[in-house]
Length: 252
Image (cartoon, rainbow, N blue to C red):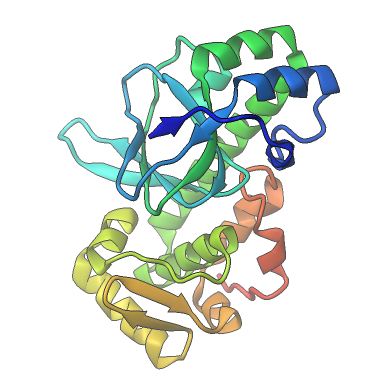
């Protein structure tokens, strides 16, 4: 539920807002409000107008593309420092091209898409930042296509867990095997086998609907490294991954 609240100083800490000219930042903050979403909530729907843009401060949001037959596939992951409603960076009239679903509880700063468009028109620096981030999402989606086509389920699973850890920190990842299989576009049994292998190597510990990462180096050795390949070209799409890159040791 969206709830209006007074602007807070820490809102400027969001990387897409921090560093703006004081006038731009002040105008933007006047339109921001708390935007909380529960696990499983839809933040935007493909083909529908974007009503609200979310600047994420906590939580994970999965992006899904749709096939003509109704199937869906994950095309990206958004965490703290990112924003949902990328099409609004082009214009408030552009519909969403992907579904955005909260994988966890989400804390965000929300703004009406039309208000954001008006402010970005008045302040080109904000538009530039939004467009750079939109480009970064394209880079991430492109790398994900490469990863899906070339790498094993085990490599992709390790890559996804590393990315989620970098965005979420040391907190356990609360996902079922079925949810992970949907995110990776593979059979549930393949995810179960992959997690059992990672558990055997002491890289993770799994409980029902809960995955705890125990050894980042071991997980990095199993990963294809695609999360760092995309990050190396674009820190804006992966604002938290620099903290993990020193411990990951991905292999091709």
